[in-house]
Every structure is written in C-alpha cells, then in structure tokens.
Amino acid sequence: MTILLYNTRTRQKEEFVPIRAGEAGLYTCGPTVYNFAHIGNLRTYIFEDTLKRVLAYNGFKVRHVMNITDVGHLTGDRDMGEDKMEKGSRREGRTAWQIAEFYTQAFRQDIARLNILEPDVWCKATESIPEQIALIEELERKGFTYRTRDGIYFDTARFPDYGRLSNQNLEALQEGARVEKNPEKRNATDFALWKFSPAGVQRQMEWDSPWGAGFPGWHIECSAMSMKFLGDQLDIHCGGIDHVDIHHTNEIAQSEAATGKKFFNFWMHGAFLNVLGGKKMAKSEENFLTLENALLKRGIPPLAYRYAAFQTHYRKPMEYSDESIQAARNGLEHLYNQVREIAMGAADAAGEVSSAFRDKFREATDDDLNLPRAMAVVQEMLKSGLPAAEKRATILDYDRVLGLGLDQVDAPENLPPEVLDLLEARRKARESKDWTASDRLRDEIQAMGYELKDTREGMKVIRR
Image 1 (cartoon, rainbow, N blue to C red):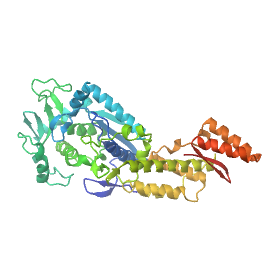
Image 2 (image 1 turned 180 degrees about the horizontal axis):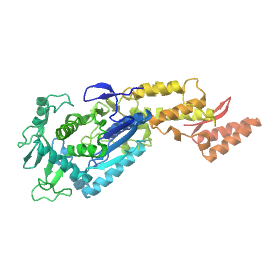
Image 3 (image 1 turned 30 degrees about the vertical axis):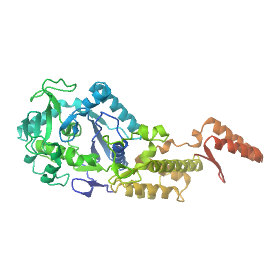
Image 4 (image 1 turned 60 degrees about the horizontal axis):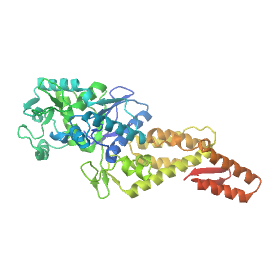
C-alpha cells in the first residue's frame, strides 16, 4: 500500500518514498529539559510514535533520532532572554547539569508510561558541540554569518528561500520578529548560531570556540545532530506546529546554506493541545498539566491519554478537559473489556489475522495517520462475525500501531489466583445445581472488580 503523509513544506499529502529502499530516517525534536514535559508536548510525541509505528507496520526499518536540548534554548525563541537551563538551575537551586539529567529521566519515564517507543539514538546538544562549531565554521566560510557583541548570527537575507516552510514572506516574518528586536541584527529574523558568555560572567555551560567562550544557539544543534546521526537518510523531520515559523525554518536555512542540499524531504507537525476554551497549553500559562498532576494523581492510567489522542487527527487542535479524559478512560476500559471477552471466547485456539480488516486498518493509518478512522475500523472488526481467535489475532496486530498494551489485557490464565479459585468453585456449584452458592460466588467475584457473564460457551470474566 502507499503511505501518504502531509508535508508542511509543500502543504499537501505526498507519497512517502524513502531515500534508501526499505528504510526510513526519522528525526524528532526532543524536549528542552529544564522542566517537566506537559501533556501538550506529549501529544506531539504520541503522534511521532504513531508515525514510527506505521512505518514499521508497513515493513520499513526505521532509524529514529531524538535530540535532548540541554543548552542554548533561550526564554525568547528569537535569541532574547536567558538560557532556560540556567533559569531552571536558579529556580531549583541545582546545577544546570543536574537539572538536565533530572528532567531527561522524567521525560523518559513519561514516554514509557505512554508506551512511546524510545528512539534508536538519544543525542544531547552538550555532547555534539564540536559538530555544531564545525557547521558554523562552514557557514562562516560561505559568507552566511556576521558577528555582533553578543554572538555569531546567520544572515537570513542571504538565503533567498527563508520562510518557505512557514509559507510567509520575509516581510511578514520580519514584522513578527520585531517584538524581540536586537539593534545589532541586520534583519529581525536573523538568528544566533553561537552566543558569547557575558563579560565577567562564568556560565555553568560554556565552551571555547573560534569566536570566544560561549554556547550554541538553539537551532544549530538539530542541524548538526540530524546530519551526524542520519547522514543521507534525511527522510522525515517532526515536531510541534509551534516550530514551523522559527525553529524549523532556521534549521532549513542554516543546513541548506551549509551543504547546498535539500534538508529533509518531509516535514510533519502536530497541532496544539488546547485546554477547555481553546487556549493552547504552555509552560508560561497557568494551564500547565503533566501526566502526574493531570492523570496519575487522579487514578487515571496514562494510556487513557494515548487513547484520547487517537480521537483527533494529529493535524487538528485537540481539546482537553476533565470530561474528555474521563470519556477516554471509559473508552479504553471498554476496549480492554472487549479484548478480554474475545480472549475468553478464543480460549487456546490459534487465529490468523484477518487480511480484509488488516487492509481496512492500513487504509486509515496509511492515509496521513488517520487514527480516528482507524479506531472506527477497530470497533467494526470487534463487532463483526469473525471467530474470536481471528479477532484476537487481528486486534493484537493492530496494537503494533496503537500501542495500547492490548497484549497485556487479562486473559483467563492471567487472572489472580483468588479469582480463578472462585470461578472453579462456582463452576462446581453450577454443575451440582447449587444456585444459592452460585449466586453468592458470583457476587464475590463482582465485588473484586470483575463482571461475570454466563454464556453458552461458559463463564466469561471481564474486569470493570
């Protein structure tokens, strides 16, 4: 089947054709590790994980690289303000290095809770400083840089296609940049490649360079590390939609200026998560929700959020509310119950994946990751007349993309021993027609959080 992906660069869906046959290079912008990731950030990582899984489902060998921004991301995206790592250090009374390590591990824990597959390569900005310096030197040799009192800047006027990704003309971008104007910049959209440490100040994170002690700008790390770890596999670059106008636009400019080659064939972006009322979630607002405070402290499993993300296409804004997450929790539990029921019906029978339903599922997922349609196919299959064993094989095949942990749903052999003992006692009571004992045992099983159904095939137990 053909995989169609929406390419932000061309503003249309295109067939994915990899640079290397049978392989796919994927670069996803990772977190700036000065604070916890919020669930709006995590929505983007769920979309990227789904993309990776869909590519693998179609037989591609995926090489996935994700960066960790542990230096250089300033509080203003246009090179104004202070380094977010230094700010986090001051906020918490720990070193910038300790802050980076703590929030990197917190991020890895969050993605594990959401069943997001880890990348093949984790790369930290602080571990690729030589590559970033070398790339800036190449830009300098080609005449794309100039020096100010606070750093080395990229001259966007020398790159004619600047702004192509955002589909804005240069004047519009210049206008949008004026809120953070630096009087020494030749153009408001020019951006820092290397920032100098302030005179008389010893930064926690700084390095020697041909231009003086300092640290890299935010954008240069992704160019240097994607080329370092993907080489000529620059197939797909992903991130949040907020990266289009500045971060990814700057990545393209500096990379193509340095190499003279196209930088990534596909650019894909996930839309915002909005809190009730349509306001985007951001760390600068009071609507900053993490997995911990939004779900775990309320007893809501993190995979309910993954399930919720599948109800809205990744390119459309998703609205978050208490009601929506509770609905997703109920929907996920209903799906788990359906899987438990077919597992009971299938018993030990081996089943084959339904080719017809597999094709319908792929038609949805291969059409620019249309997960809302794919989830409708899931329900269509589960309610179909397929044998239970075939349903079980098919839903587990789907879960290679969904990542909802459906292979971990309680099958009869996975029930707690005390429940199995009660079931066996009830079976014997029914055989001897002791209906009073049968009813009492049923009530005991249900009091333990299970629903019991008597069917022609026998007793079926479903966790509530």
